[in-house]
Image (cartoon, rainbow, N blue to C red; front, side, top):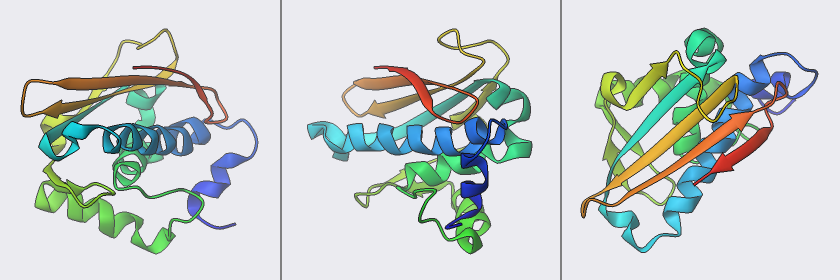
Length: 155
């Protein structure tokens, strides 16, 4: 076992879709932003969790997994001893540092939203939206299987 998130990679328990899948989705999302010319004008990322991710996401660590994914952390290589410290630092400073070094403001109450309705007709889904200075927005929706695999994404 390389990290605490490896526990959720086996079997069909819900924790795979609550941690590994959302972390991978956030990683994929910031990779998409990193390839955009406007990446340096990014000023906000909004996270919307729906379905089971909204209902039990905080208790199962979805919030932490998504924020860590935005920093570029990978479940297979993540040091379990830094999870809470990194999450706490993001919440206390009100900012998150993206993989290419860009630091953006992050307001827990405004930028992380728990939605009761489903997104993309999936029981567990996440919508990530990036906002750039020139009114440009880039969004992606990711749905998950019970094992935490991305079942589909829309940009």
